[in-house]
Length: 289
Length: 289
Image (cartoon, rainbow over all chains, first blue to last red; front, top):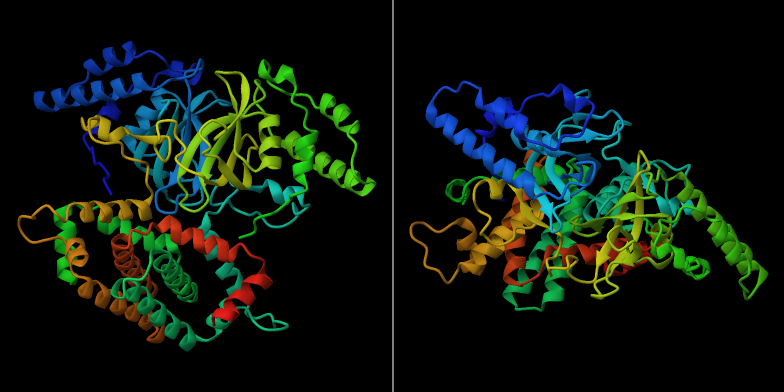
């Protein structure tokens, strides 16, 4: 995972002036910024050169964004590990520049007419690992890791109102997050685990049986892993390999549910391992091998 | 995964009039719609009642959306299996109503001042499985499965311009999609596979060794699956279970790379299995057990 670490941008942030005017107006220009930053005292000429160079690059990127007539672009915060869309807001030049330098997802509040960094009140910051622009350059993804629930309601994400449930009169049910396949499956398994105390009429579901019988579960995980390997060893076809992998994943996720481990924790581990440089990754893997 | 199937909404779509005025104006009102739909002839009174009831519900949901002063809300299309943000556009009442009835992600084009369904030209529709509103009711997720690349450039998604790479002068490199952890890892493994023909100086990476040695790879998959099971059998702690699952996932994904199988295919299988009703799921799992 190529995650850049431009720590020197921290100094650029210092040079971004907190203009009082920003609280009442969208910020378009950059003359003021250029003038103000040039008056800053830096520890060395080299640092100054580097920061000015970087600042110029940030300005070039910001110039390439197609801001709307209010000076805004759509900004979507996405969980780097799970892919969950955490929230959507709007960003102006300063919001993006601040996000670049602080690595905290920052937006422009249209209702309060001011910059705001998600988490400045709740401490649930979204730590931005990368920023992406779309093909039209008018939409931005802040790809990051949230410190806690993103929604002001305490919900993990702001998207917990499913339209088809509303149409089916299920609005009284608990909030249902917009979950993609892996997390829907995780949620289903967690639900089955939560129902273990409730006696089931009829034949129990397979998930319930696995949750209740650790020996069965472990024998299935070993068996499915073996079957996955055999798709390679016996040169079986692609659909078979995909199906066996689905079996491995599902059964392993039942075990994770029993251990109270979330897939997000697993992905967090994988990201940390693979966001190291190639050399470091090689060393750490070799030491494991 | 609770994916609703309101097929009867198809008939509602028929009752949505294709107003010529929509091509030049944002659509706010619904009087015209109500008048027009009341003149339609239905096969039976029951169907009519059901459709009118459903239509009324759709209108209620649409009334709850906080449309901006242009009658629009942000609409984000997300891949239900991978979580990838495919594109972002804007939707008006009619775009959401059309998406509800047709199950194809539909937007309002601000530049062309008209409704457009993603895929109407390219045939790369986004088949919508669920729709979510955010806490403020001014942002919408179309959670769906794309028929092909979403971006007009042929890219899988519209988000392939990484800001930190631009700042590091890497804009000449190939497009880099906004990938979350699982797909970054998949991409890294695919890259290692693509480099197998290139002689490596120094000690090969662990991934390269696994890709070159199927026997080693399969022995590692079986070993890691066994170690995952032992975290349950030996009551090891949560971090250990998460770490072992990370090992299982990584090694299994190296095998998938050798078999040219994408994680998206695996998740597609899991979604199809688990989007069946509980009873069906139970039956199909029991027949496997």
